[in-house]
Length: 164
Image 1: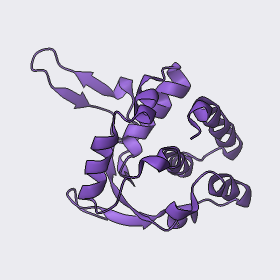
Image 2: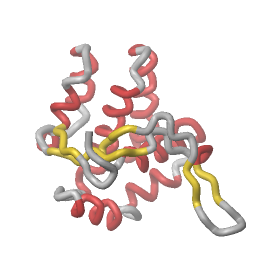
Image 3: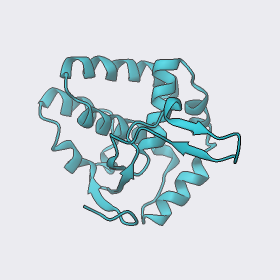
Image 4: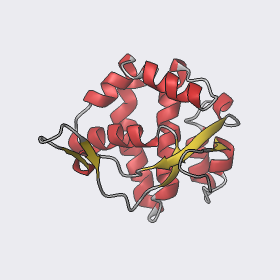
């Protein structure tokens, strides 16, 4: 397990090994560009459930506090940002963050974070990065496989307009 200031590298194929049923593996293989499957992504300790309800803003000192850390563990580097996008789009029907992502508003940040970890952020894979997030979300929250398949279909419907 990496310490707080370290990360481990893991390929998407290695992550895919955690998916037990072939139908689900196939579902993800069809939605992630092949070039990305062997690329090793950094995994860092993340929140795991970053959504508006877990972000507090202080009026007294203009600080931001993140609460509710019980799902914290190593996640792919962009997991928390994509969880926030996904949660807002699917559960609140708020597509602002997702729209900004596909318009390139976060490209410089994602490029800089990726560069710090020794990988290249490629704009052409924006949808694939989201699908990788959902793969990890699927693995970490997969108690009921049928419900998760339905969630994946809802997720796909919410991002269909971004199919690049």
